[in-house]
Image 1 (spheres, rainbow, N blue to C red):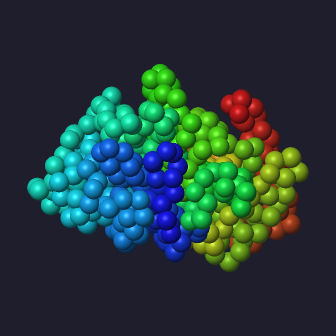
Image 2 (image 1 turned 45 degrees about the horizontal axis):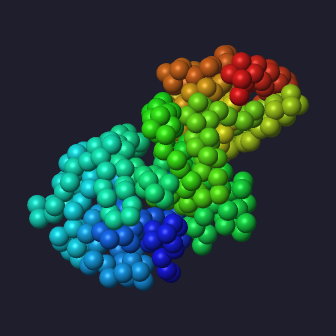
Length: 406
Ligand code: FEO
């Protein structure tokens, strides 16, 4: 691998992780990249490091441009270990470098490493660093998505180095959006953006809107956005900004995700007429069996859809474990602007569908009640009821979608 020049004397020097499939529980079926950037200016500056496993990869990439020991500034936009865990190895190479970091970033690094011999410059929004021909502007982005987070704007290059924001988990030989679309597809790229947003950034929609508004207010000209994961946006950076604004508003497609699990297929049998009823109302529908689908994929499909039906059998008077886990995780992501209902089968006492509704109400979502339940296996009459319920639910999804105007 080699460094890739993204702007005059500014290089991608990161690493491609083709093999990672479990990113702290988030399933990365397409791997990821850990992007970091070298500014080969009078004062050579490295922006972010990489995951420690890829230390030698980034060092060799840097070495293809300069001797790494010549780096004098290290900017740390984010301390999460996928970006900062190589820092101690790198600091052994450049012990006299100055680390530019937020106050909370420094406090976090102090917990991960022995930083006593390192030189820090604590920065806040509006602080700058001149490296020679380039001027860097730091903008704090707390809780996007960690307290320490910030982004770095390179003024003369009109380049926003955005850490996790605008990233995607894709391992690819393409470094840029246009390259990726040419060798893969725009759908894959957009799907990866939604996947990342849904699983990492969903809770922070209001903060994202506010931070993008701040950037607009500052009048920063941006013609390239370089995140810390995935491809770099050079063809149309406004596209990814607009996607983020839409997702922060809770925008979704006119479709329904049926997310379910099943014991002896009864709840599963219910999904068929439900799906048919939804489809016959002209609404697209995707059916997701939880034990056959990684959690992060189920979350993404939920987020892409305006409506969702949760299907669960009753076991020991409560929800099936995988459904319970899904709703528990979903609640933490604080979804909004979604309309949702529940269905399921039971043998004798029931209880799971009520419990699902309780969880959905706690999330503050638009809830369609009552749901639909069948005892043991759905009869022909039950299947007809499911079909009608699917149609009615789809009508409500269309009304709600219309009401939201998106
Ligand atoms: Fe890619 Fe928040 O680390």
